[in-house]
Length: 79
Image (cartoon, rainbow, N blue to C red; front, side, top):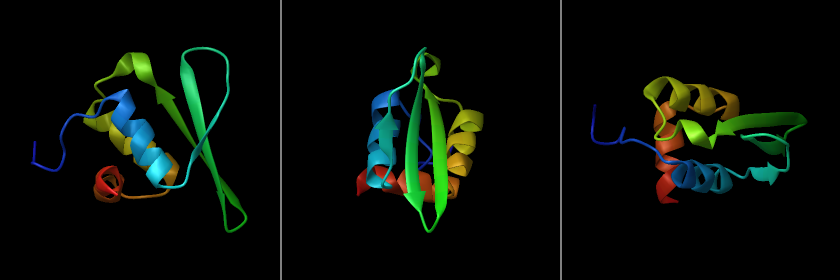
């Protein structure tokens, strides 16, 4: 695993999503939905905190749902 692809906890993923302009939308169950409306499009990222630390597959899935690359997803942690 490269240095920039460190394991992500739920707290870090939430910080990334906030830095990318997402906001929490209350839902039932263990999954959290984070949404962002931009340029007439709604982006929705599902975060399943009991699955933390998140595997590369889940990080890639969340980045895709957010409309960014995995590298951009990780960079948003330090904004």
